[in-house]
Image (cartoon, rainbow, N blue to C red; front, side, top):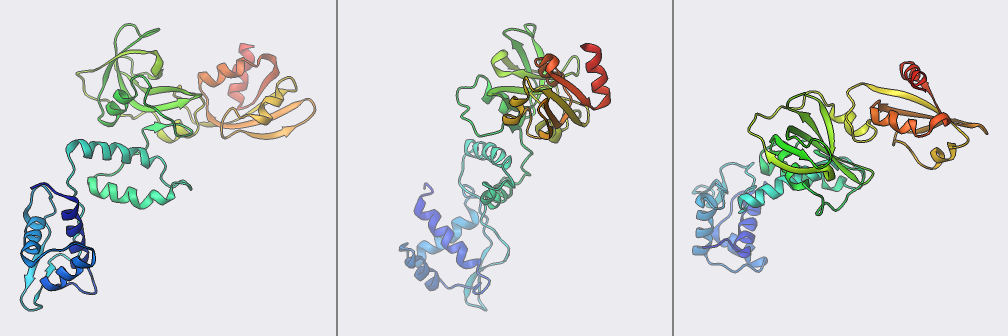
Length: 317
């Protein structure tokens, strides 16, 4: 017999009654009347069948501890803390719910999504596993349906599966990638991970990937890439292994107006401004991508801090 919506509603009403701290014992007559209040008309025999299903039906998986107490002349839960947290979902439904929970978790604690806190806790309890930290990072929600290889990479990250990867402009020889994160930078998506043969951390554009295939090697857990720094204090897509640095940049008046209206990074602050230019500060992990971006501004930019980066900058000028 299929599990119908009315059956589930009856089970929910029964559970609510038997979970009551104020009235833990219920007669069949009282439960029939309570169900009638919810427009669920049943007789005592049907109600007893519901008890049996809630206790023993493997499709439901409730295993509800319902027993009759002769002393109190009513039905009750032997475990007063019992929670009806199993649902008739297929394996595919559970996988979809798990992946959805992962995506919801990246909004945990933010103002606009604070209302989901309770939902996340229920999903975590239902799945009987802790929700992982964010595996996808982007500055605003986007529609991902047409992104090449996005689903394959996301599933591989969730399942900790190494992949053979070939590129259409580079990495033409297949290499094994241990994928860790997906990241969006300036409307382009990248997968960050570790190469099997060199142990090097890389970020590869999804549009540069030609083929992906499961690799028959053990997954190498991420022990190099600091998740918080990578998401919060990294400029661009390429991984940076160094510490977060306080950087001060001087831009002359030829390009200073760019930085009063647009930020290089969300940590950017205007530390000083004159008619000759503007002093900008950032708190980021220094990467080659950041240095290459600064080169675009040529003589209009001067690195003031940190000292080691300033000396490196002077040598390359």
